Length: 171
Image (tube, rainbow, N blue to C red; front, side, top):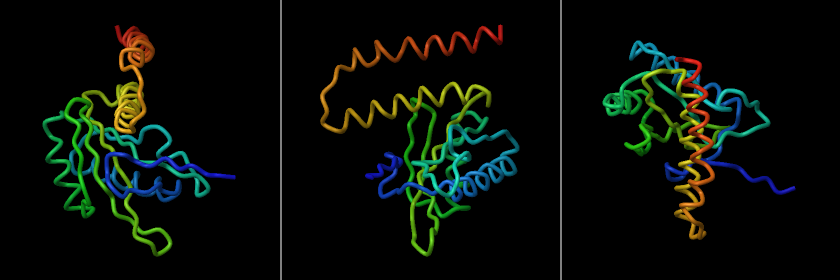
């Protein structure tokens, strides 16, 4: 059987991370962010839900801070974890960094994505939009031809409806 592993695309040389290690690292980063910035932070998606027999492509974390604080957060992460590389997406309010870790004596790099949100509850909704946009970026750089208009025609209404459904609960 051929196994295909997802891995973060924003950070060079990153590798998939075993589920048990991903959970340990994500919970450590979340706790450090909460304690240092006195705010909410959570893991998104499957980041802390996988076991030692599964792999994560990256670690997705949301933090309840304004986007303007992203350089301060990256500075903290750099000092705390020995930042390997960083990538900033201003339009999505997401930054990524390479977290260097050891797996069975081998040095590896995991991509950690931090999404900055005004309300931590919104992070779960926004992560889907971020994921779709990331897929679009990967496809656009792969040489595969596709119609951007048809892609957004199919995907944008879905996320708009998700957003409306979320807002309707809050109104």
